[in-house]
Image 1 (cartoon, one colour):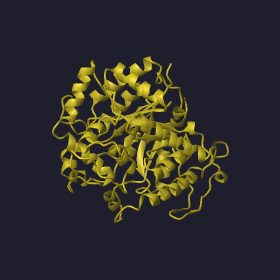
Image 2 (cartoon, helix red, strand yellow):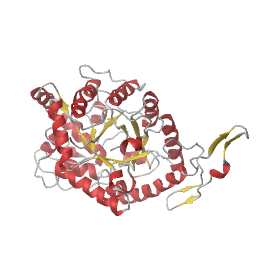
Image 3 (cartoon, helix red, strand yellow):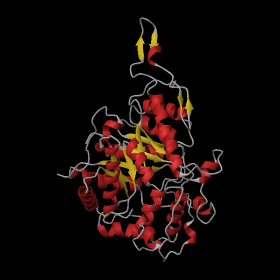
Image 4 (cartoon, one colour):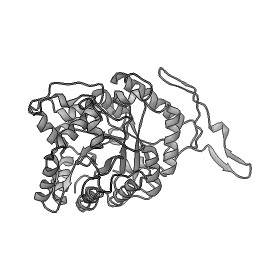
Length: 434
């Protein structure tokens, strides 16, 4: 029996697969399209759905917004917070994680919003903590450019300290509901925090009642060494991008060592690696589906525009048939490193094709073949699980059904993932179930 592992879904709440057969038409803005998908994922017993977000329309690729708007890449997209509320109120067991930036939200507002969402979700809400890695996003919030990455993480450390204190500004039993005495909350159990730090100053207390989890589950994607340190100290679950099994092993070992050095139990952190499986009735049909996508005339542009957006590097300037020069960024260095596979000798064209599989061969085939491969990979380093992401730049009901009604049952038959939820579990309890 394989080690049981966790499953999440990395969802971009942007335009659906609007110009393909069986598409939903390109106008999912009432949210029902994504609510329906979340219900399908819940039937498959996923741990959580994670709603990604960015705060700008990019022009990093070629110095223009053309590719981003022509192909609806990274936008338009919906605000993940109300989307999380819709999904949370329409589901009963699966966790709902929303991306919210420490740059964009004052700590008090974020703490209040997370508490509200955790109530709506019945204790199943998670906050995907991001510091934001795009200069254009910073300019939408009154800055000329982002602070350096080190400073952003220093600010995030303090930010998390502030919101944790705000969530503790009400004792868990502060709401007494004493009808005989007419007392709703005991004022002695609610107090200001009077926080004064280097970057933030907050009086408190929160003006929301304590939520079912006390604080939301923390999700984070730390790729650079500083990001890994932040994730190791903070996260309940980590979104990890690594190219190949050895890179996965190295990443998880490093994060767990960092967590242990910080006094945490490494087993409390579930590292979920992003994978992009393609399944069909036969291995040949799955490969043809994949090839049709990566050989499409616009595939390279879409892929490079995507990585340009999160790194603020214009990849249109590089020769597709040569190796990349060594690059650094003030954006998402971890995403850049995972994409570039430094020292591999691969050309940019080869890297683009690898990106469609996240550097993990063997995830194209029948549901049984792909299930066996994911189990094999997870067993190699006794991992925690995977985060599904569509390889096709857009999401469709068809792809969700292929995974949730094809791949997941194949994993369930092998005892690799859960077949039912425990009643009443919070998201943090789901993640620590095994």
